[in-house]
Length: 288
Ligand code: PAF
Image (cartoon, rainbow, N blue to C red):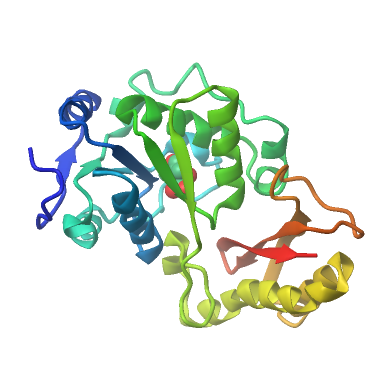
């Protein structure tokens, strides 16, 4: 098996057993293994995770699995884009293997009786709008870690709360791997790349710029403090009534808890908003 030779397409592994075999062979050759967990519908943001994985490890495995456990009953599980052939073509020789299990392979008894409980931070922000989402996400991520047993796993910073909770799980459960957060990839006009952007009409895509604009004006106002940054971001949303703000918060990146108006130091501004039927999130680091 030659892991580092770019090939036209990655090897496709659709069972846990085949994936374990593949990883065992890589380990026998003393290769470091990176995992990039995804739900497919790959875009440049995902590809930046793969590129970073390639810098940090010898073998890069991308998982593609739309995890039913992390979708609420009224969410977009059924219509979530499934673009497997295009995903393989996009990966090309950048990834060595794709682990693409069926739902039955991952949850043979229908659902997992044993799940990971994500803790208090999971009830905030995304967790308020998406109850149970983070338990479902951490449950599948821990299963993926157990199947692949990577040295390192890479996650996009766009899902900042997800990154925080994955790191917290790894620390709390003493999981033997490193987590690498990779910066958000944006379009030239500021829109953060997301698999859900493909739901947006041309008009909605224009409106969706409201999220990154709010983060930008907050950054510009941050020299005047947290309250000023929050006011500036809220004013940006007021100018776009068709963008329905879900939450806008400024948190301490170390605890993911909201910061008071007199806090100083590093911070993270989080926004979530609906544009038409599509819910989008974005975030940016700030310093006060
Ligand atoms: O970020 C995602 O795409 C998913 O939440 C993940 C990490 C692949 C788990 O299903």
